[in-house]
Image 1 (cartoon, rainbow over the protein chains, first blue to last red):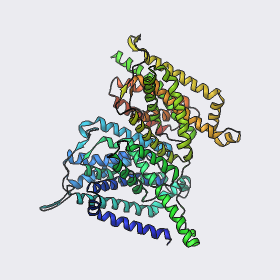
Image 2: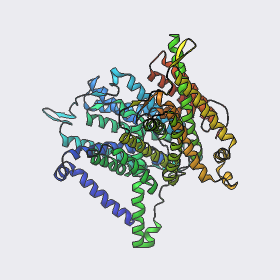
Image 3: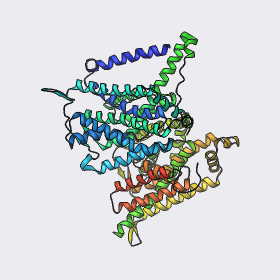
Amino acid sequence: MSGRIIIERCVLLAFAAFMLTVPWSVPALVNTFWVSVIAEILIWSLFAASVNLLFGYVGLLSFGQALFFGFGMYGVGIGIDQLHLSFWPAFGLGIFAAMLMALVSGIFAVRLTWHYFAIITVVFSLIFYFLAVTMKPLTGGDDGINFTLPPTFSFGGTQWSFTNATFQYFFILATVTLCFYLMHLVIRSPLGKAFLAIRDNDVRASLIGLNVYLLRLTAFVMAGFLAGVAGALFAFFGRYASASYMFYHVSGEAVVWAIVGGAGTLFGPIVGTSLFIIIRELVSTHWEHHSLIVGVMAIVVVILAPKGLVGLWRDGLDRLVTRDDSKAAAAKLPADSKLRTDP
Amino acid sequence: MMDTLLLLAMNGLVWGLIIALIALGLSIIFGLLDIINIAHGDFFMVGTVLAWASLEATGNFWIGFIMVPLICLVLGALIQVTVIQPIRGVAALSIVATFGLSLILQEVVRMTFGATPRRILPPISGTVPLFGIEYEVYRLFAAALSLAALVAFFLFLQHTKLGIWMRAVRHDRDTAIAMGVPAQRVYVVTFAVGFALAGFGGVVAAPITTVDFRGGVDLLPVCFIAVIIGGLGNLPGTAAAAILLSLLEGIIQSVANPTVARISSLVLMSAVLLLRPQGLFKGHVR
């Protein structure tokens, strides 16, 4: 085990310990408002992870993941508001709607690659954005639909619902952790290796007998699942669903978060998302032009750390560790996954 | 009924010519630098705001037609050198960088110009009778000006040294460099010209649209649609697609609302992408 991995394990353990104590430690250190900010970061990290699964592991840059986020949101919103579903069926409906949409649009979209793929995913998401804006009776358009949340669990008289902030936080933490764990399992499985083979060279991948089209479609539906769960969670979290979350700017933000954090790494999206949302929350109360900082940061990170912040951290750590135990670790230098850039 | 149709179709045609200019800028940046420029709509927006600023400063709208493209040319060159050059060759990063650029341009405009949309009065007022309807003179003038700029751009591309270099680098970068074409300078010029085309579109369009820091957000997808339907790298195809699409949206708008018109052009674009990724028109494919 190289020194880097030991250090990373320690950081991860500290991170996990912190996440588990957030509802108590954060109000003690800052205030309760930041607990909900951290919950929001978790949700958006999951959304950024769906971009990362496609771009970082399969080499498909999707600029339309907001479509599936929106479907997850509307599945919950319409499920509760119009169909009067309880918590879990509405959750299921949101995820199912997102995955179905991912399957249908994926059948067409994954026939294309690179520029064309990026553009057709934007186009699909724009089509449904405009449809959602037009179908006001069903979707509420840009104003969205508000709803009251049914309880998550009820045993006899006792109920657990999102009105309890601590329960809300842990529900979101558990769901997001589960999704990241599932993604981790997929990446380490033979399926994940096939994804990487396609990312690095799709022609070679098809020559060794991989069904590139089907694998890309699988990844697309999986990414739709992640985005759908994120959207459904966000609908629960905000108690509303709105067409504005399907606009291409939302997809674009997720792409920025994933790439700035480090595409092709499991934790990159969390790092990128945390960075941008924390800055937004810190600055926006004092200065209304906080987007300016976001824009500058995106450019600076991309120029100085093209592998993202996680890539920068790993390179730095590797350099540090190799200096210590020289060749042993140097031999184990991980072949840092270079992202495919040529068309 | 016939009058509305004619009016909307004419408006569509005028917009189409303006959009053709902006989309051409997008297309040369796309084709030459391999960059998906998310900030391109904002380049147009900057053009409209600069037109407003030059009108405020000088009291004369006509100066803007000269000044704004020149300012945009300089801005474009600066942005290429500082932001685009360091990440050249990595298209995914360019999307993030231009997305950041888009945020910066919008925020700077919001800080200086303000968040309230404004209108500019056209420098030529009045209407002329045209096929039985009264049509605004300025819109006809805008169409003529855009057409002139389109022709000038194609002449520049065909007959000047820089234009030929630009075509050479797009066609085969390595050979062009081996033949002594200064590729680096060509990239700067291309990005600057792309910005200037969008900026010029902004000045021309300023009196017939609202000047708003979000003005580019809706325009960006339309320009991408034109570039794709026209065929990536097919510049005349891009211009033709922009004009046809706007005309079509204008005509659909006479029977349905603008959103339906937008959805139909998006569906048309998906079909083109899937069935004819080389674009609707036959021609040079990159």
